[in-house]
Image (tube, rainbow, N blue to C red; front, top):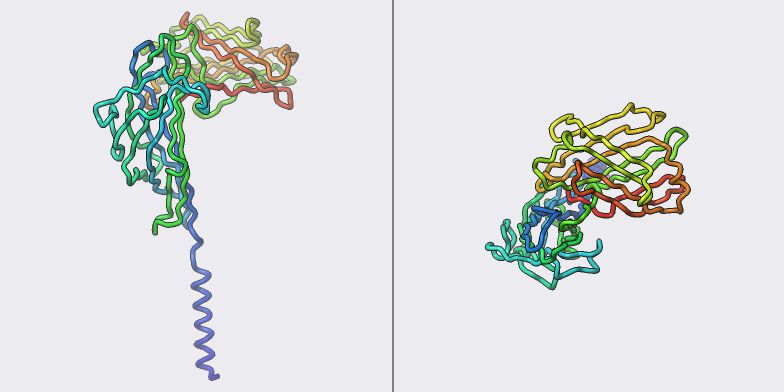
Length: 359
């Protein structure tokens, strides 16, 4: 074989190697999303009162091309089923007579967004959001409004009942683009709740879990509480209302905090009272109240409390004791959380409130 032929072969092999080595890695795609249920009013709902619930979808699907993680368009097909009157988190039990769906003027919806064909009653305790047969394309993680539905309370005393929305099992599809192949399919859910007037109101868990804690240390022990209170009063101002909080075994609190003059305002929608910041000094270390923002959240207030003291008597309780936190503003209906706290291996106590705020 002559030298020219040898050179041509070597050049071809070299070029082929460049092409193979230079080929980009295959794209990866994941499909995910969530449904947001935002009631116009969440607590204090009276007999025959109608409230609206806004339904949004947030697409969290992504693909990973060579340049990094980017949003992937999600196609959501219907129907989206909203279970109402849920007694438990999984909605395996329902009080189907407690709430009624009231058909609105836009194909059964009170307000209907693009891609939604109708809102309708399904099985007892169920509302269906029917979508266009082609589905709804959601480009990125910006929440997309789907519809507003109306629900009516049928009970003189409405207990805390859950709302649970879900798509079909594989109704959320995201594909590598281009060329719109290699698709992943999944489902999406979202939950909220409604409640009537009660002699006490529930303290709620933060939207993103925030554990309550009792930590036993070589210094003073620490009680840390984080939760959400819903106060349907536009004139509510923590700076002008007394603040009381108690914590301990039901009927025998070990911590009693009273601030007759209220919590000082320290910014727009923020009220803060701070202590010395020294775990060797007993008493209040922090009380912070923050008005939540976002649609339907203007009456929700996040509460943060840190207290140092001798809490050793709680170590004498049986594992996973039931403990009670009670909070009151200026004689208003008290906010209460009474449930089991988890005893950790190191002896500390931890609690994640059962009922979750949508704000």
